[in-house]
Image 1 (cartoon, rainbow over the protein chains, first blue to last red):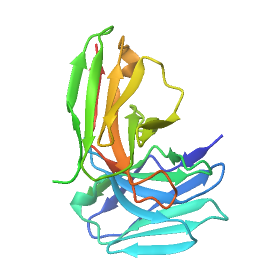
Image 2: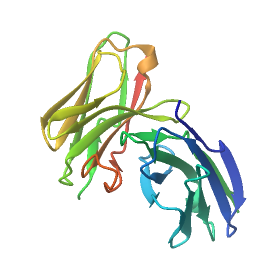
Image 3: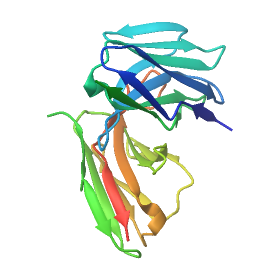
Image 4: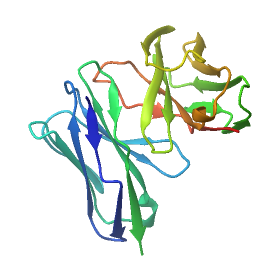
Length: 109
Length: 115
């Protein structure tokens, strides 16, 4: 079967750095997405990785290792507004998105 | 504003009723989707439409039926509602269904509660 694993919840301190991991087992791979979802709101796109390596976008970076079936989202200089769920999704060989359950990130002052 | 908009935001109804959720996108996208997010927060695709043709139809009960009057709209009709249908339903759109697609754009969700 297809599977996306992420930690259920993480806690970090304002101003610090946090890394949210995602491991996947899918039938084929056509890219990995990270989305942010605030409580009661729609998921919003953060990043897309299809090749190995690090993609940096301001305070957020996303890393991919296809051979390990592994990705992480790195958030720097954490702000209170970063408190949200972070969803990892992989596009399989049929171009269907397989979603993880999301990691709830709690930021403390 | 360019966006994916869905209505209503909240829907509370009784078992056995029939209800509809509307979705419109003005992004000019070719593909629209309906997702269900359950209490465990998994997003599961229900349907997608590309140029008015159904291209994905997951194993959802036939009580659920998508209706697309045009490329910019994909409505979700639900017949004979059951308690287990309670969830948040998200509409989304994308330029196309290929892997190089721009990311999905989601509506703000409809929280359906069946009592």
